Amino acid sequence: MTISTMNKQDEISVLRRCAAELGAGSYCGPWLAEVIGEVESAVRSDFFPEVTLRESAARAADIVAAAELRGREILAAAERRGVEIEAEARKRADRVDGFRWRAAEALRRSIESLEAV
Image (cartoon, rainbow, N blue to C red; front, side, top):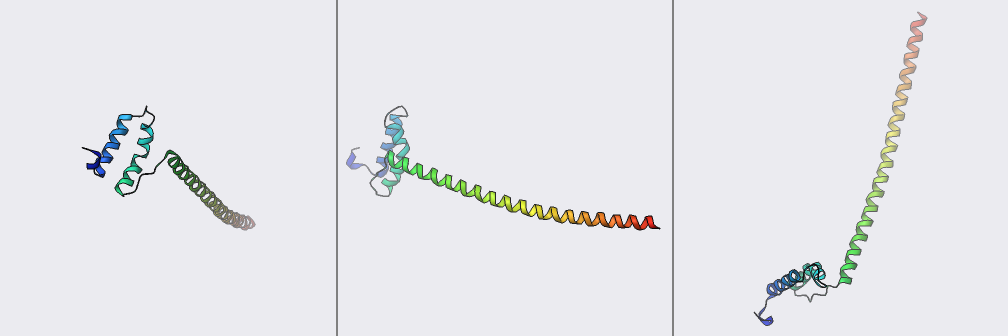
């Protein structure tokens, strides 16, 4: 099969074989293995593949930055919710303390009434 008779799938197959033959210990093998998915997508979409290590590193950095930002947002929301839960718990504890105090007062008055008899 010559280059001129290859279709998209043939070219993708050659790239996959090339990446496998080069292997992880070669200079280009790890790079090709890293970008082959994007190259395949570009070929299937009739775009000229223009994936570089710099672009891949920039995309990875963007993904990490977005994940870190989302993590900070989630943590901030959890901290706010924790403050809300703590405030509600304090309100409930204050109500319980009020009930307890009133019950103790009622009991004290009952005891005093019984002692007066």
